[in-house]
Image (cartoon, rainbow, N blue to C red):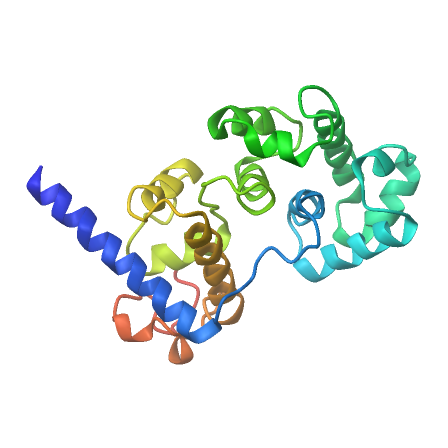
Length: 234
């Protein structure tokens, strides 16, 4: 038991060191880039399987059509909604996903209120979000953390790649296993969960790509990476 606690403490310090190094390189990320919590929710759905630049175009289209509110979007015809979100890709499926979420959000008990959702118990609300067609763990947790301020750690493909390459998590670990790894070792602070994930995204975008740029990586000095610029080994 003592050894296990010591290992957890060491891993906690390593994770915090990783965060500090990323913060020093990238600065605070101020993620998620949106003007309202509802815009975050929409973006979390539209960003599935696409680059954020494409989502920005789709959201700009929605805003040009009218106020970005659930009561406005739900009244758009399927054809019009698909046209507006087309830049985000997979627009036929995303129209259905977005509409399914809107029906949930506008129905009781939340009735389109971000405040009511914020006050809901985290575990219960997460289960409700996961029950919506087209909402998976990453999307649900992005809504919980970035739109509603619930203390959950978001895991994505960058998280999987970076921490597998650092030898901290298995390359083929499931979503829940990866999430538990961070939640059990990091202080349960919403601001830390928020910015840590955003830092990992920045690292994955700029350095830890499928063919990595290890020479300029802010984590190079840790001496833990299993790739060392040789290619997409993980």
